[in-house]
Length: 533
Image 1 (spheres, helix red, strand yellow):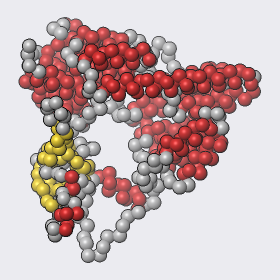
Image 2 (cartoon, helix red, strand yellow):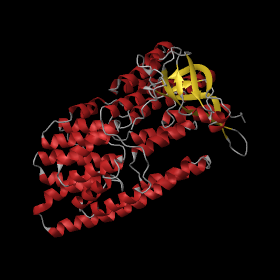
Image 3 (cartoon, one colour):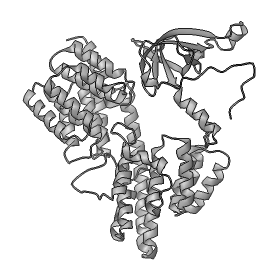
Image 4 (cartoon, one colour):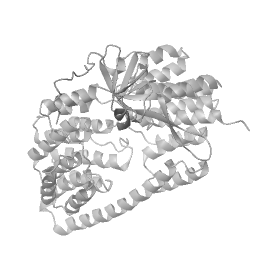
């Protein structure tokens, strides 16, 4: 619902002529808000105005040096023309040193959400597109348990009906996705398509719903949602759900699994890859192979992975004419696997939470990841993360050992594989193995399909000036963090700590704090600050 504007008020104009990442650095900005909340209004002060300048921009965030306090959150950020460029979101916090750690807001380090997305959201409401009301449903977990208790017993129709009954009260995205999956499992593809389409319009970044739309198109040979699925085939290495785009591509091209090539990094991805292989086999009428693929998918799915039900529904359809004893035997095996998967997930989450808690020393963290690898020895995501962990600590040989473990078998080119391939050459350089480093980077550059990583590795080999490459990265945070981390490590290799520190700080300014490179840059900066023994 959009409230009608009172006739006496004139709305602030929204800046629509320039993208957030094209806003010039040091452009003046004003933030409006009520820092003292109701008390400000009671004192007859209508609003506060703080001034400052734009420091950095990206598509997702605008960093300003305007003072932003608690009450300003949600207030407009206005440019020199009087146009709204964003919404005040919050401030960066710093942690004091000492025994008691206190998070202190840095009021002059403000973060602004660009206005483009809210403006687009309002326009879509006006045109009647479906949207989630944003209200959190605290009973959602209980609802999902009820749905799952039916689905796990293969009562897909009952589970779908229950889910649709729940949706009559609220369009929760999680329930919409569940309804799409469960109707897929009942082979009601038209209804499944409707739910996934609705979800794709509500959550435009929901790549899984778009993948499911494409899978339905592929199965039914009806291309009804091209505008919603076409972006699956142009996803870049740095996008969070790039793997789902890869799945759509191999399904489109009917690319079969190569046993000598690993194109997944963990069990969840492996389960999805096997499901896609099963679909291709089923369409080719290779029913025995399809059954085997769906069974393997089921026995690799995480306890909360919806692909478990997707694979079982296809398997059930193929097995209709088979001996009931064989069917029940596999279902028992699948139930036992789910119990074990649930236990493993609980144990792994506990270990990961301990690892990330900040309460453990270095050796205790090593003992934790050893336990993690015992639970998931082939999890490439964990292996790659450990390689970065040791690089962060300057334990170069240990990092190399885990990088070599990651590449023990040929793997698909992903964000993680690209970053580890480049990291290996940089570490060899730091260790003083110059010729090996050059050879490693040349090989990496020749084999990498991604042009950006190839450009970085060629730059390190050729010893060209950094300015041109930094300019080429533009304002894209994914390119900036990979480039500056690489340049920081390279500067360490030539014993230039000042230059390395500069690049690490630039990497941190990307704000991609869930990236391995971010942790690496932060860890190396902290290492430089440690007093020499």
